[in-house]
Image (cartoon, rainbow, N blue to C red; front, side, top):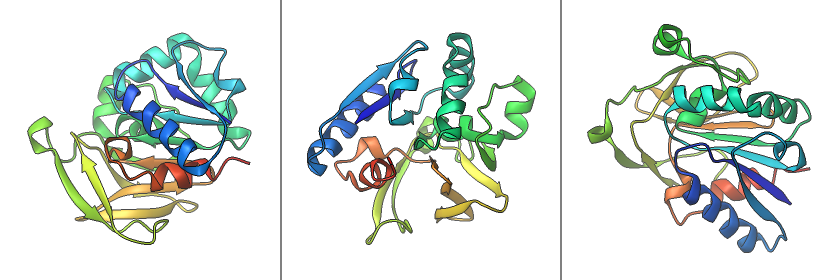
Length: 197
């Protein structure tokens, strides 16, 4: 199994080690590849879009042609997981901030987002979340987190916090407002890799 982690900026190393740890835990042979240029994603079975600064990420992915490869992978049914800024990039509607900045979005999920719903870096927090795909609560870490403000039919809501949706799935694509790569709990990565056909 080959897993791509878009490595333009953001929590890249953490996602690589979480994915490697998950493969090991599942007893699966495989490799996790940091992706900075086009050409690698078509050879991979699953793709992770990490956190970071979503405007920069979107722009650099478009410049490298990675955005087109991710859309083709999604159409081919390959699992894609976006965390934090990755969630924003997966949305069809990036909200007012994205419209103002002309942000480049992948538009793979029928969701609307608010980029900094909880405020800045100081408003980072941890919370115990009920996540529908897991059998017990999950300790979720939120850092300058976006939220999902609206969903269309076909979206499965996986978790909510406060009045916000913070995890959702549409087909083979998963969007998380929190950072599963910053915990020792690999259950979300395990679920994600379990979607690989």
